[in-house]
Amino acid sequence: MSDPILQLIGHNICPYVQRVVILLQEKQLSYKRIDIDLADKVKLRQLSVTAKVPLLLIDKDKSLFESQVICTYLDEISVGSMLPPDPFEKARHCAWIALASEVLNAIANIIYVDHTPAQLAASLEKIRLHFILVEQQLEGGGYFSGEDFLLIDAVYATIFRYFEVFIIPAGTEPFVNLTKLNLWRELLAKRQSVQQAVPVNYPELLIEFMRPRAMAMSRLLSHFNECAV
Image 1 (cartoon, rainbow, N blue to C red):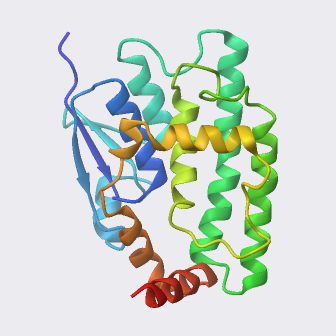
Image 2 (image 1 turned 180 degrees about the vertical axis):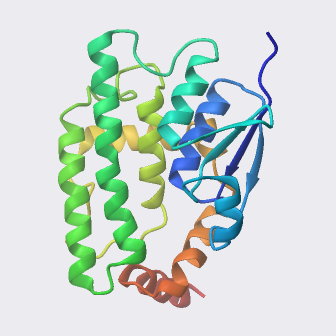
């Protein structure tokens, strides 16, 4: 049986696309990536029933949507697995991957909803409380479960990437006193597949994407960049 022809439809800064790309890179699967304009809803609806990315086209006549479904499929058709072999550990990883959506929802609020500093602070507080829970799951000094880079590491790497760009107001820092989480974050940032999941100008692309919405974080970023010129 020949390997399927894979084509990934995505967007250049989408975190859900990034986790699929990281898995593809880690599994060394051959694929073609096409990034599209999310504002083109007609094109999106032509490609996907959800009008969202990522979308995986398989052999030109089949498709899958939803990042976790795509990752599960890719994991199962390739050698090895990016989930633990132990049934409980596998379930635990899947639970924390699902819970990561709470952080991504808070980040979405920062990008699309949080117009006032108070709203921004509330979203950052939600993220901080989640990170405290994650800190308690980490052994420290390695990846989420030790030496092996797994899917849960890919998921959180895409979350941590935002904070390489965001300007965090004083008193709302979500990483304070989280030693193990910060070590994990630094380790993930060095991973080649994580670095290659986005364009080299990712910070500029994210800032430009946020600018028209003029939310509190976008205004902070604009002010910082103006002062840096």
